[in-house]
Length: 222
Image (tube, rainbow, N blue to C red):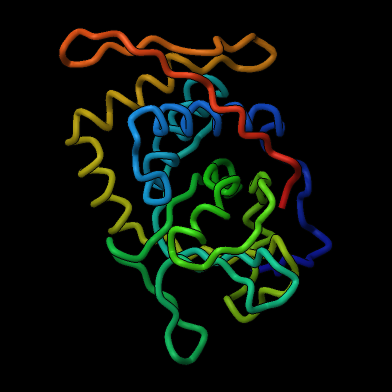
């Protein structure tokens, strides 16, 4: 496997930054409107983003759960870790209590929660300023292991297909989640089409509320 410093790496993103930001904003806004535990919503982000990429971009996108490690600070200790790392510093594992989720699509890994890395750290009791950036990388640029992470933006992913299947079955069995995911797809408009600034949502009691598009801006790429 190539390291992140390979000369063969593909630096061109699969989808433009503007499109990534819009997908992120729609999903984030819908979750925010129902006061969801957003730091724990990586699988919702991944399932919904994959559906949007399939529907609007005709991409072969699918959600993946597993262990994930991202270097987000020049200090190698500044790694964002999801899953467990063995004492040897090499072996990684994930389970339903320790995992992350991302989208894999045509040879790329796309993490639509990357703009919220700062919130993820804060929720885990590790407040650290992290820029709001897009994460979208050719899988050929992935590091060979956790110990190979050396510069910000380096990453190592370890998919767990059994866990992914289990989480997807649980997701599809919960009508509240599938309804919210469908709502995101109905609200989304592919750039350059204009996006409605808000969306009407009818509650179980028939009351109408409006979801506003969160203005969270992404200021670069990993």
